[in-house]
Length: 274
Image 1 (cartoon, rainbow, N blue to C red):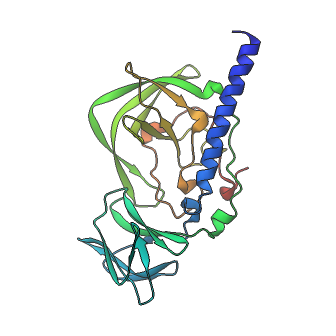
Image 2: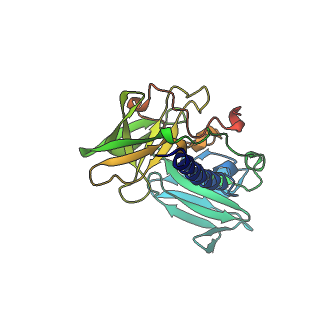
Image 3: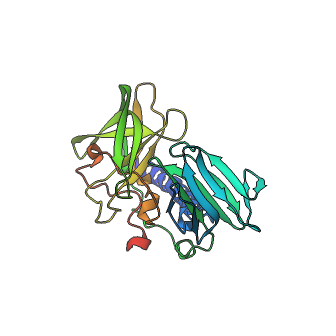
C-alpha cells in the first residue's frame, strides 16, 4: 500500500466518522431528546402532580393512569385526550410519548417501575448544549473480532445509573478480540435491528477522559463466519453521562476492559469534560 493510498484511506475514514459524529450531535440537540428532560418522576398508587407535566398520575396492576383537570389536554398517538386517560401496562424499556403544547411527556417503564419523564425544548441542559468532546478518529481502533453465540440467550442482570435499579437483558453471545496483544472479550446485548448487537463497557480511560460509569458501542450483525468490527471510534455516551434524570444500564462486570480505549466520545462538558 502506497503512502498516497494510506492517506486517502485515512481521509475517507475521517470523513465517514465526521458524518457519524455530526448525526450524533444532531440527535443530542433534538428538542425532545434526553437533554430536554426536566424531571424523572417515579409513579406508585398515589396520584401525584408534577410541576413540568399536566394532570395527576398514578400506576397499578392495570398500568399508568393520568387524570387531567379542566382545560388540560394531552395528545396521544395523534388523538387529543381529556379527563382520565389509561396508558395501560407498558413493556419493560417501552413507553409512550404524549404531546403537551411544545413539550413531550414520556410515559415509560424502566427496571420494572413506571415513570413520567417530561421533555421541554427550553430545558437549560439542552439550550446550553455546545457539543460532545471526542477523540480524533483513528483506524487502529476499528478492531476486528469474532462473535461467539451462546447456546441459549443468557439473562444478564446489570445495575443502573439510579441506585437500587436493575436492568435485565438477554445476552445472545460474546465478542472476542485482540488489543495490544491481549485477548479480550465483551458480553453483547441485542442491538437495534435484526441480529445487530450492542456492548456496554468501561476501560482504563473511564473516569479519566471518558465517562466513568459506561459507554456503549453499536455493532453491525456478524458475518456468516462470526466476524464483527468493533469501531471504538463510535463509542458513545449514554444519557446518564449528561443528566442525572436518566436510568441507564451499567456494563456487566466482565465488560470492564483492562486497556485504555482512547477512542470515541469523552466526558461531556456538562460533567466537566473538555
